[in-house]
Length: 350
Image (spheres, rainbow, N blue to C red):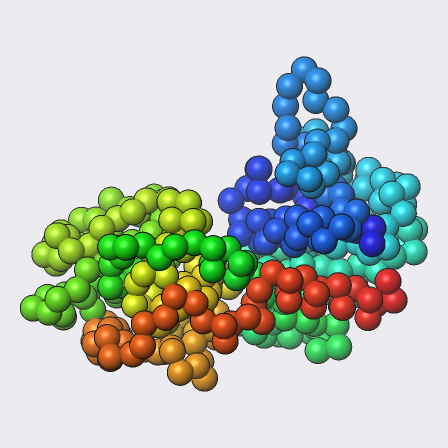
């Protein structure tokens, strides 16, 4: 299958998680033998920088040399038409580029799929309304984002929840950490991480035996380290920093519980990895987060609403069986999710 991915700014230029998710899907399709090209603002440099760059098997093609929505919107339709894709898979921001992708897809006689992650800057554009009406299909990473799209007028016939994926083969191939902590938490350490809730829960357990590790880094790390010190739990909480995926898997396979407290999350990717590694999931419910979806109606999950309930869930988790892999989450495996994506393409006549 010949797939044109339209991503105005790739993960090389933005930290937006939605861009990383779209590229992960593209790389997954390449690994399955499909012909995929990402049409984007140029991010590569050098005297020999041409119109294309291949990175880890994924081809990137320059639409423009600098991020200019109007210039990219003018150039994109012709490029897509010449590429002759079977399907165009685009991100929604900026809406002007999505509309250009619609025109290019029409010229190339291909359907347009919009990968709407939920962290895009769309509403400030006068074309925001069109962003939900021009795609043939919209993909959301969670029911939380899907509900927001329904509020924008997207009907269920054009909406599919396609979660992020993980790699179960990678989980099974990584040995559990021999000296893993009892409790882990992980994500970007910014203002939305809300680790204070976890730390208050751990402080409730100060007289009990436990160790904890925080995986990830970010601008709020020093603030969280100070909070752990103020609560006098810093001797049992280790900040690991931004360690590799293999190190994270090893920690999660050795730990008993993963606690997620973030205020905003379109899809709780790190929580999913931990659950697949056998951790019990303890999620503090937040109205702007999709994390609770991964533990609802699961025997190995707790949905809580306060630090006291976090402490109680940690106590209860001690009595549960320790697992190093949970096959109940196999529907999130890479091959399953990519298969579901290809099925949506084919349902559009590809």
